[in-house]
Length: 327
Length: 261
Image (cartoon, rainbow over all chains, first blue to last red; front, side, top):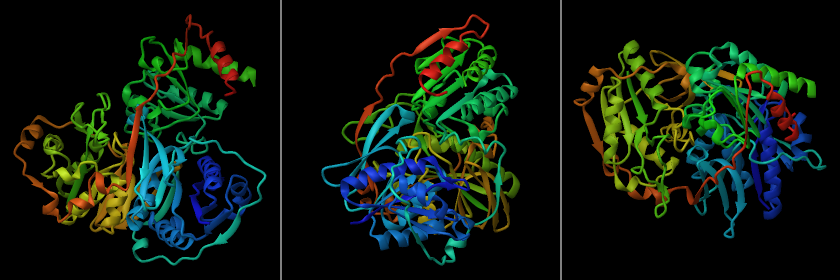
């Protein structure tokens, strides 16, 4: 029996949703292949998370509780994972398909001659024993299936919200502490400070189940106060179209689209966004789409499950009232 | 200081995207091909390094002969020289194969800094910058929203979901940038004219000492074998407001029915 490794993405508050989604999927896949599921955790907090990781599918949790894990860029995690994959004789690594984690996978794949598939939204076992991965490309216009070349390790980057996270009554993951001393090369880029931005307590738009987004139709940055009000009522993240970020109404980091973030929440609510192709490329894989726009001809209505043609400054405040009344 | 800016030739997001059913690769000549929009930010940052540090900047592109127009476009922003890697054997390379070619091209050059875009608008894997850094045994300072150079030292702000990390390293280094880093300027008329006479070097895999077996579709570590267009979406409900916002109640009902509230 080999181990399927799941690299856990977490914050100070615990494992991120995508990590529990990956574990749930890994439990299902390992059930078919007869493998065990092992979580891999960098930094402090593994002991507190052992019960959650276990109930979502992890038989054990390797953890490296060293300040070095996040004290330098990417390479500490690469070095520890390289040793672990060799020792555990693992042939599959699931990781969250987010920017910083993809760097770890890329460097590790070069080092170990592995195949990497990013933004995976489906995983199945093929007849030849290899994984086939579903992936949406061209901003969701095309759905593809890929596989890793024969004989190579498979590193699969899992898209957020692609799989449900389902706890079972399984016990806590068995904790296994790892030990590693870093090479000099791994200490080449030092993290000297960590800056957290305001609004970081709101869910990240890449991970949030609900995302509220505003665009050119907001007319000014004041419109985003309204978006944030609606978002906080729905437990949502707040995003913006490029027109709004370029105008300086909302920070670039929240831009959804071809040069910004790609999101696939269960619900997207766009206000004052016309839905140009460059924006749709970042959000059209959302499971449900709500659009509020005064222009009934706006392309966003072609992909909207529920569209409101109207003045967002009339509709959204009323929506806030209606939702408050229904709570 | 010497800076190299690898850029990508990508299908226009607004154009038609075609996958060739025989080779299962993107038919890059089917729609209009453009300089990848994320490269506007890496190019602008390189121009700033020219202005602040007198950097010499070379643009690097891997692609077919037609990619020359992409090099010229990049040069029109004011960069100094072009390097184009063209070889039939490259076709069908995956992200890691692409990284091998780019790393081999960089190895033959002198540089202090490599400036990538954060994520191409077509493949969107983001794997290439870190893979190139690994192949060259250099730090990968990716998703950078702010960059300062002081002699051989570099300080960057690396963006992440909660904010950013301030990172200190030494040159040479591989950097990729995000949109927050700058506001790209348009090429000037003078820049567009000058781009036509800037030096352009074209190299093959043999020039780089890379064998054809190491790259291309045959060496890809991950291969797409099946594709289908996204099924068309069923038309949703559209309601028109009378100017009072009253239809918000219908939207709220829908959200409750769908269990979002």
